[in-house]
Length: 194
Image 1 (cartoon, rainbow, N blue to C red):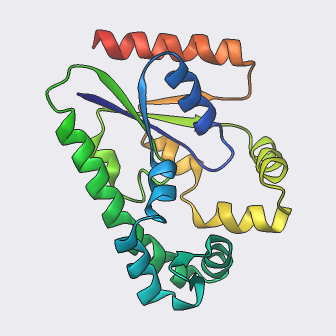
Image 2: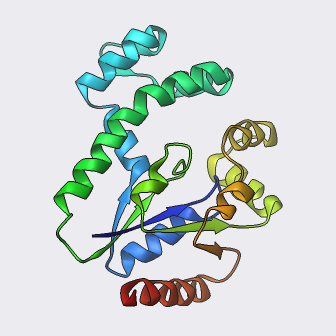
């Protein structure tokens, strides 16, 4: 198994890269999808209820309420991350174990790759990047949020400049999709040949 990470800050085009690679026929493990599924697992809901009882109602987590709570208090965010990350790490380890004897190329789409220390599991790291103003406009339009809310989210993540320092390759996403796909094909051809 060759595992390539696709990472980048919010709005930098990481998900677009992952979608293109998936359409090219490669398996892309979506960590955001893993997180969404966690909120339906009874064991995880119990953990959230123990630490954030005000956001659990009738056995379900009110994710909007939880998000508002953690984005207004960095200590609460760190607590939430400390609860989520062990579940995700186990999912990643199980995935690696299941595919360990495959020579195939796999990808993991993970915004918090470095923050979670998952770079150590990856053979290659690809960072999506785009000009800050474009990043901000993308997120505000996509998520229907204010500039202030964008800054709150962006400021709690590792900066893309820091991620780029640790990347094997940086993919600028401010280009037509056809050119982006060609660039990704070239990168993947190099990975498969390695």
